[in-house]
Length: 427
Ligand code: PLP
Image (cartoon, rainbow, N blue to C red; front, side):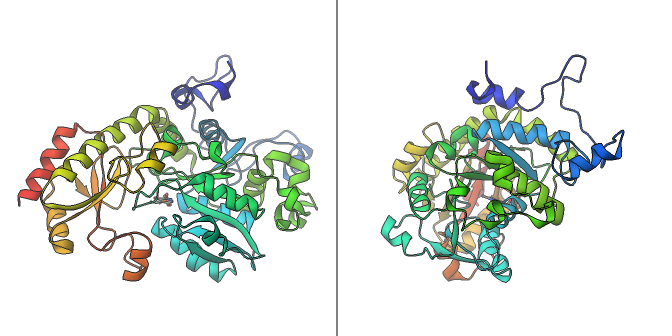
């Protein structure tokens, strides 16, 4: 059976590493910075991108490549690469498309780190970003576009607001303006949503979250659908469609076709900016991926039960989880993620910010950590922690109330999670 026809669970377990006769059954860690060649000429051909092969792990490593190709198969893309973190994945994606003088249109409700990257750090590099309300109608969002706009960005499920992106709407707007749609699919994972099926062109991940799933390694991934026609808008994307002087005048789209985007990101950006994922982390990530299809449904099941319990609790002021019928995003969630959302939900307690902090301090099983989306249940107060650099106005724009508790429901027995919430609320 062809790999791209196999179901997600089979891909989670088996895609990527295909051992030949007598080779290890389990993906080995190629813990080597470098690779040996018989002749100088062979190595030279690799440097010229005339042949593919490994020569230095900052550019490519067999362990990383096997894991990247598993993620590409899961997302239904043509190629993928691993990065040292989710931040690096989003930065590389933007910088592989844009250069100084360019402009990005992004949803406002995104992870705080990405908001900073787009709104502050890229600005210092001459790349501007306009943030838009992802729920606004198409005409309103289109007002953000400029002649120098080069990409659109959003998160399938936003962190921490768990807002559902209308991917088809974003894709329609992006394509109308001749630019690709990049979707960060970290929270949904390809188990619950495959953004390429809805028109997204490039998908990014913080593999640190559900993909690893055990909170043991920071990492990122970029996947290209191969669907965006860079050449059709060649004037907008000189980096991909015009000769690269640092590669003897090679033009990525001409030389690599559908693989142009990932080849450029690997051979040019990784070469110059160096944010490779360590092969050991890629090995651990692969172990996480082997159970992704089992863990994600359990996270979703537990989160739905916790959300419904909180909604009925009289000490709770509000609950935000798009699996609840009362949620503004319920319909969109049913459309894009009919099998489940993610384990992350948010809620506020009656009594506001101080009560929220006291409640969190009284939790025993559920820990306060700067993380989401791993096997262990955890909480965080974004206004005091991850998003503390944002003003109150920016917090509200990003859909984060000052009393918001972000709860990442793990895969423990849900009765024990509820018991912990109950005892902390009683205090
Ligand atoms: N994208 C999303 C949706 C995230 O939630 C995060 C981190 O929480 C990132 C990107 C950044 O990933 P990393 O922490 O692996 O750099």
